[in-house]
Image 1 (cartoon, helix red, strand yellow):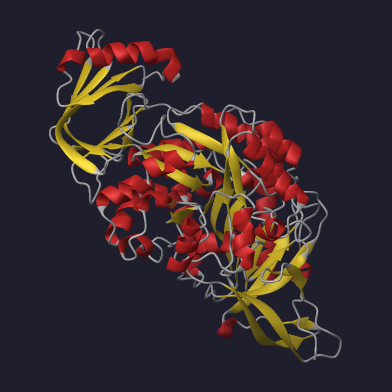
Image 2: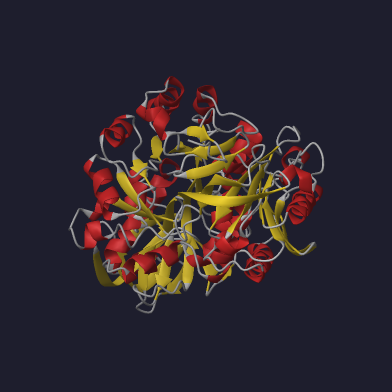
Length: 602
């Protein structure tokens, strides 16, 4: 099926009016469905939808006056007609897929609009990488809007990225056709302290009339939170409890509640609506980060909506949170998010509003999926070699690169340990007593304390920083390495054996990036991610199959955490408390300062 270019409302307004009046024929009519109106939160049976030029011309009890000899008619047969689902905040790179393959994966799940923040590739390739993502997004048969990344590095002075994003970059990108706003402002201490660079980026977005994304990853709801709200972010997705959600909407922000592959923050926050009775139009559902396996096996925004309903949310309210609320937030209420005249004709036919089977998906007036199968082409961008050759370690690593030297004469030391928390982005700052042997600090497998390293891969400096991590449950000799290392995207290596850690790091250097798991000197799994070391341009099913082998390999090494790969990939995210690793060392994110791996004697 050939994809048609969507006309603006102005270009097809006369035809829409003519179709609605019966003077011209519609391209497509959906007959006899139950119209789910997200503006009024009601279900209206026995309604028809007439579509022309990829937009909705008429919604009413009888569209027979819109049908001509060339009009395609779809019989809804009493099914619910709901708007295409919108993901308000997400990172395509987290699916290990390019925009084209991500679109192909989510279209059968009813996602017809995404608001994406490509700050992962911005850290690796800068503004040029963002442009590549933006350009491929505009090629797709669904709506993919791009938020210009705001923070590369996410925490200046605490990490080194491949490129830095400047206020000038932000101002330039605001002129691009697919840019909808400023990506999540992760440097919340910078905003709280009125950092001129951060405020200049926010101002550039505000002047352009764009929406500013928020990221306040702190439990402190005192003056610091109020200062952040005053700094301009219009939404926030980092809330983890009811108090977080309430605080945000009371300050005029939208509360974005996420259900990704590893983040389960809907159930703990949606009670602000279901129990406290706050106005649901200020709450939005999103995924943030979804692994390719989740997309293939569990779904996308349809999964989030179902989960919200299972948490006690009224189905119509949950649908509002994934359609019209999102569109309104980004200033697109007249363009999408509902089944009403003038809007893009993004419609889902489903036989049940609670279990939400996605039976027929229409985007921009075209059938794009039916019964779980994508029926439309998703064109690929021609990614250049500069985007495919981004792993520059400088030299191969050896086991000696992963040694943590102990203070002279020490037999035992107290170390700071990154504590992984299942299903949550924050970590815990733990302490442990570790033995010293031959002047080297030893891991403690029985206490589930293994080693973590960050291998520099942007400037070929040949450096490695080492620390300790707990919570994965690894046993035996193993290592796992990934060039997906939010947000600086160097290379994270976690292991119980230094020789395996070196093998894993060198393997990723050889293949140009990805994820690998080694056990006893042998590779158990490999997911190649040749584009920026973050993405594959292979189909989601292929990537998901390799990712499943990675999960199985992690389990074979003793890890039982839910979606532990996501936890692994976030261990360098130096804007989420409490403890992280960067190319500069160990970071105390509660204080936003460097801290020692080995605690000094007091």
